[in-house]
Length: 142
Image 1 (cartoon, helix red, strand yellow):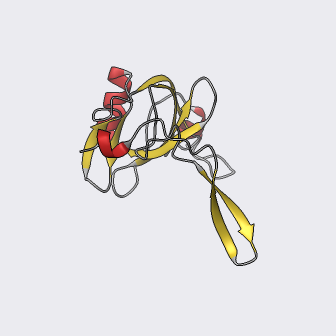
Image 2 (tube, rainbow, N blue to C red; image 1 turned 120 degrees about the horizontal axis):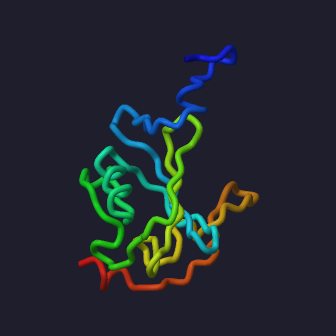
């Protein structure tokens, strides 16, 4: 049912779980730390990753670069245990609040968002913020 404002009432107001995957079969997933609220990472889930995340309580993702399913922490041991999962209004994005073991970023940092954008005279520039490494990625990912 579409409302007068053009919104899909069942999708936006109903209780049916109906994720809307993009043309590549993916939904965007934002993972935040359940305790601090820090944004840890943004990744993608396909239907299988979403299903496994719901069934196991561990965060599963789909790697676009490797073209394969992966459980967060399967190599590093830095797993994400899902505390809560939410869908956005039109069900094309997922937000998971997680208990993060170790670091979330493959660079060894707590979060993938360890650089801030600054406006400089020559244009935008990145500066490190909260960039301490929790582990050495060269030793973990061989």
